[in-house]
Image (cartoon, rainbow, N blue to C red):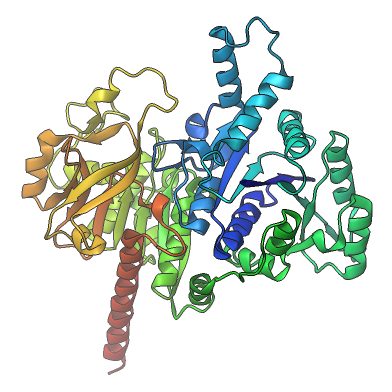
Length: 549
């Protein structure tokens, strides 16, 4: 039967449950086990699609169009396999299902309660991915921290599953913190002990403890943790702070996290993990031959998780180009025509990020204008592509009032407008154009050369599109739609002629970039940044030599 591993967290949030879950899954996958990961989030939102990025980081979109937690991005980047709607469940979705069933009369007049009805639905969702025997191991990450009120039904559901399935089929990995007090020069285990005690009060004990720490754990300290937390000493795993999240799988392999889990699940351990490709990537990442500077123009730059997939895609592309990508966050709300030269002149490339709403829009347009005029490599994603169209219409086509009807509903020069099928929609959650759609590329386009194909499929998350009535005017001026949806004729990619690298995409290429398969658009974008830097350095050198002649 399919085996189940649960990853819980204690002491504090943001310890990295998603990275530990993904690292364990990667090691198990590298041993030949069919492995997947799912995330259970305790908030009452049905999904994170309506959440402000400041609240919960980016909203990650799967192939089948599910708006999910950003941890699913880590799962895909590590495992190099797609996730789906079934891989992310929220308390809101659980309660919505139970309430709908109650309205249908499915509970035959019973009083609907947290136990057994909510916990039964949680258990059903947990087991869903393992029903068709597609996976040998299903890892479930429980969001939140042990002790949170909203987490209690999940802890109870896991307790019941362990009792029903037995310890050899169901395992709990608890991620906790062992803080280092610099004044006392001592590691403290008490927070971990309290976290495990709190979990045990609800009838659930961890099988494995993964301890986040700044300093190494000696054997005496591991023995102490094992004794007072009721686990075997070999099940106390050290998780030192790493210089990159991509090193964590190797550290967990050194600590034998995968081995101890397999032993407790009574599964074969003979095959050693094959992480050859992973190590090659990590070697390129840690020892780059050069460095480029990319400006990330966005409105949520204070929170790195708001653009998590973009940042990770640039790391992947940097390793492929054997260069370090230094990202400079530039808040579009404070960028103007007057400050653009000063803030952007030292950049090797400019990426204008996706987003919603009018705040910071003019700053994005100013950044795009700078990239266009100064021949700086440019990549615009979703809203970034749309604002590239607005900027070109205003400053090249002579349409001073050009805008998106999202920001200016009354404009009569709406080069970006709401999609026809979106106009009758009133509910916000899960109603955008979501998921993977086909795109056909012009054979002689830069995009086709980058992808090595004229037929691609990419993931989307938007309501607005390029207004096709302006297509001819744009094309005649050298701003060419080079990618379109074959069914709807929706413009998916635009390119500017006579520019070293200027591409805008309506979709989100960052969602499909993984360690083993960096996205070709990002690889080409970082490659263009390298060329731009080399040309600028050569020009500076010639100027220096001329002045000294």
